Amino acid sequence: MNWVDATPSSRSRPVDSAGVSSSLIAVGHALDATHLRIATELFYATAVPALIREIAEILRPCGIPIMPLKGALLQRWVYGTRVFRPLSDVDVLVPPARFDEARAALRAVGFTVEREEQGGWEVALRRPEGLLEIDLHRRLSSTVRSGLRAEDLFARGRHDTTLFRTDVVLPDPRDLYSHLLLHLTLNWLARGSLHHPEDLEAAPAALGLTPEGMVHHLACVGLEVHAALMLPHVSAAVTGAFSSRLYAALSPGRVTRLKVTAARMLSADTAPGTLARRMAGIVVAPSWLEAGRDALAKRLTL
Image 1: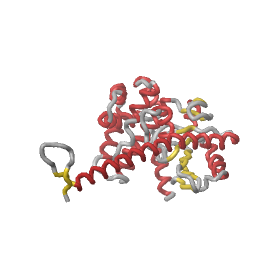
Image 2: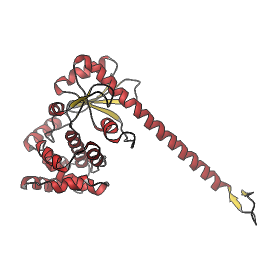
Image 3: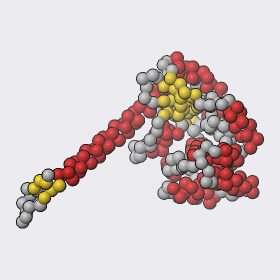
Image 4: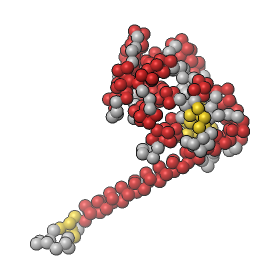
């Protein structure tokens, strides 16, 4: 059926009712999507800091410090209210020696739904009625792929009571960047996709990092190979100059260059989860022996 447009004109124009209906439905969907996005952002803006405060206050009587990681930390410290960074859980690091005690303290107050990662390097916890999971970390990755040790992160970090309105330990900004690079590299080697490459431009801009300062730190924590391997991909994927400047500042030695070449060959044109990609993960590690031993131990627990 065609309706007649009643707008005064020299001649009447037929209007397609199906087209009008489709347009109205599209507008309705757009409004629904906008409202959903706003509601989601408001939920995370309040629920995530509240959960971190709760965790800190549960563990404080035990003398266990916490260090927020990844999305929860980036949203407050790097992006603020300018950009919403999606996240699915709240990552928190505790000193490895206190991990089991922290886990028990959280279970005692109702975080009884558990999903433990293979090897026990982290456990996801939530209340039965809860929407957000806590990813409680003993270390930063399932196997040894860098020199970023949890104990060293706490030693280099600083206590802060303003960002989350409770006492947490913030990592040294260089460690925050290093962890982002490590996470991005491991995701790339395992799955062939870049995980939030924009973080590697946003964090240096917000925290005042310099390429010169990062070059030395990456070498100290065993991430020079990761940087040489991944920074060209980051530069190609996102707008910003830090990644290209950092890559230009690197001075990789012969061993580093050989590792990068081997990792590229092993991860090129291979499906996610293949043996070749797992071998590439071992190649980028500072110690092949330690990484291989760790990977073997992980496989034997399957």
